Structures are given as structure tokens and as C-alpha cells.
Amino acid sequence: MVYAGLMTERGYHHGNLRVVLLQNAEELLRTDGADALSLREVARRAGVSHGAPRAHFIDRQSLLNALAVRGFERLTDAVRAALEGDAAFEERFRLVARAYVRFAVDDAALMELMFAAKTGDTDGNVHEAAAQLFHTLESAIDSGTASSSDSRERFKLLFAATMQGTASLIVAQRVTAEQGQRIVEDAADVLLESRLRAQAMPDLRIQ
Amino acid sequence: MVYAGLMTERGYHHGNLRVVLLQNAEELLRTDGADALSLREVARRAGVSHGAPRAHFIDRQSLLNALAVRGFERLTDAVRAALEGDAAFEERFRLVARAYVRFAVDDAALMELMFAAKTGDTDGNVHEAAAQLFHTLESAIDSGTASSSDSRERFKLLFAATMQGTASLIVAQRVTAEQGQRIVEDAADVLLESRLRAQAMPDLRIQ
DNA sequence: ACCTGAACACCGTTCAAGT
DNA sequence: ACCTGAACACCGTTCAAGT
Image: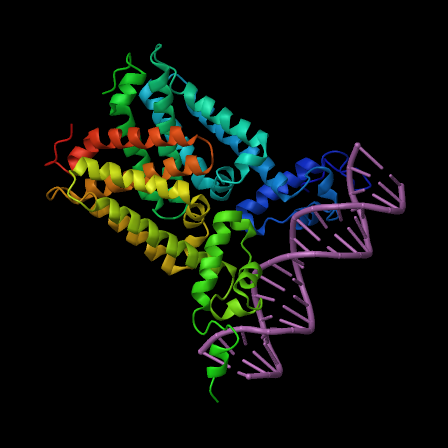
């Protein structure tokens, strides 16, 4: 049913196998976690032999990297969606923060994969997808007029770190979901009222 | 029958194997990463058969959990060390923040293991070791006089999240070490100057 | 009590062979 | 160009047997 449109009568995927593999891998990641995500199981679910994925992913890490890229793209989209509309800066800022943390909660295993240490070195695509996310976060801050690009960069990084940490604590189940929600709001408060924020966006009056 | 012969002649560990396995595992984790950490390799390095670890760790996850517990204990010690001495609150706060992030940088793979999503449910020991860390962080904040325990709890969680996020970005190599250092300082500034901090510790004058 | 070593199922990876 | 299936090395886990 999943592959209905992708298959021909012979059951071959004709170039769509890559997409099918990724979908199955994402599903497997969500339901059973990263440890259960084996190339052979993904191939099995796609109805192909265990050697078939090799034409699309040279090894397991390559598949994981592709998943991370998709994750960053989806998170970037979620942040972008939060930025749409004509809400004031402060409100948009909070919407972005909530979207970020919500993504981490809904897709904990994927989020963990995206920020796993090893993906960094190997694959340039992962790095670029992550850069895209950071760039979008930056545009969430670029609503005021020009200012020191240094303090703006620092504010952006601190914002990312704070959201990332909140997400991490929730994902690692070190805090409850309710506590997580409150951390997001407190974090937004603290960041918005900070001197660093005022320095980065001097034209914006908060509160 | 006596087992004296086993203990003396042939290099048996007679009760120390558990410790030796943990040391080898920690070393392996640091040098080659979590993926390379197999029970069989750890056993090999300890000079025992691949079945030997079973007497001390029921499965691989159990060994990983034990590593996480040791990691939390070491991080707790590092935080405690930063709290010693008679520095003023603000300075101690910064020392703790730096110690936290330094630990994450020096032992990235271990840090990742400690905050991995899966360890949460399974092992109560990991949860308790993490709670000990949080408790120590709390005592870093308990220097002022009494106040709303609610705002103090919130400040503590936000502090933990911020440090955790900074560490996460560095470990995931999404920022450079220099950027990481600056995020820590900015984070400390922002937290210390925040109204939430003032609410949690009303008797403290910062700046 | 602690450890050995065979056994089993599962994996990642490689590669010649098929279509 | 894309996929199959055998082959190989490595693993986690189990367990009867040894000391």
C-alpha cells in the first residue's frame, strides 16, 4: 500500500527505492529507535534484498546522514512556518522557540540523530542542512534594523543553545513534558529581556 | 574445593573484572566512539572470554548504563569542585558553567551517552546519578536566603538546559570551541542578569 | 562464584552475477 | 542502471560445562 504508486508490475522500484528506504527508516527510527534501524530490516520492509540499499546508500552511516538531512529540513520548515504571519517580534520569537522544542519532543530519536557527534565530520550534506536551520533561526532575529553583527551572532547562538538544551533535557527524559514547556517560556523571557538581545536589536522595545 | 589457584596463577580478576571492563569500555568510548564499543572487544582487552562480562553486565545496554552512571558521578564531582572555595556567588556560578561545558567537550562521547534518550526508562541507577547531578547544581544556587522554591526550581532547570544546549552544540560540532566558550559566558551573563534569577535569589545583588 | 567456549541469530559490507 | 544472493567477519546473547 505504501509502495503502490512506486512499483511497476514486476515489483521493482525503478529509482524510487531510495525514497522508500528513507521512509521505512524514518518510521523504524520513530517506533523502535536508532539501535533497531538496520539496513537489512529497512530493505526487508521495502521488499528488496539486503544488498539493494547499497546502490543508494554506501553504508549504514550514509543512510543515517540522509535521515539527519531530512530532519534538519523538516525542522527548518517548522521554524519557517512559525515565522510566517504578521505577529510582533516577541511573539514570533516565542513561536519559533515552541516549534523547535515541539519538534524535538515529537521526533526525539530523529533529533538525537541530527545532533549526534559523529555525523559532523563525515557528511557535508548534514553540515549544510544544519547551516540552513541556523540561517533560518537567524532570520527570526533579523527583524530589527542593523546593529553589531557580532552581538547578533552571539544572540543567535545562545538562542540555539538554549532551545537545544531544553530539547535535550526533554528528549533524555530528565525533565517532564510540563517542565519542558515552562523552560521554553522562561528561556524566551530571559533571552528577550537580556542586554545581549538589546544590543543585538537595539531598535526593539520589549515589554 | 578452594579457588585460590585461580586467583593467583592465571591472571584471573577475582572480583575486579567489573572494574577492568568499565575502564576498558571508557577508554574505548573516548578513543573510538560508542559504536565501536562492543562487549566482545571490551572482553578481549581485559583478556577474558567473550562470555565473561555476562557475570557483571547482563547485556550491552547494562554496560552503557554503568558508564553513564560513572559519567554523571564524575561530572557531579567536577561541579562540586567548582563550588569549593570562597568565591562570590556570581563567580562560582560561572565556574560551574565552565566546568560543565568543559566536561562535555573533553568527554563528548560519554556526555552523549549520558543524555541518550534510551537510558532513561531502563535503569534506575542512571536516573539517580542524574538526579544527584541536578541536586548538586541546585546547591550551586542555594547560597542566597530562602525564596520561592518555584522560581528557584525554574531557574535551576533553565540553567541546566542552557549548559546542556551549549555542550550539545559543541559536541555535535555545530559550533567551534571558541564560539562555545563565548556562548557559556553569554549564557552566564544572561542568566545572572535575568528577572528569574532575581526572583529566585532576591538577596543577591549582581553587577 | 566466576569464567570458558560452542552455538545461534542477526548485522554490515563486499562483490560477482543476473536483468 | 539496478538488484540478487552467496560469502565473510563481527556481534549480542544464551547456556552447559569447567575450575
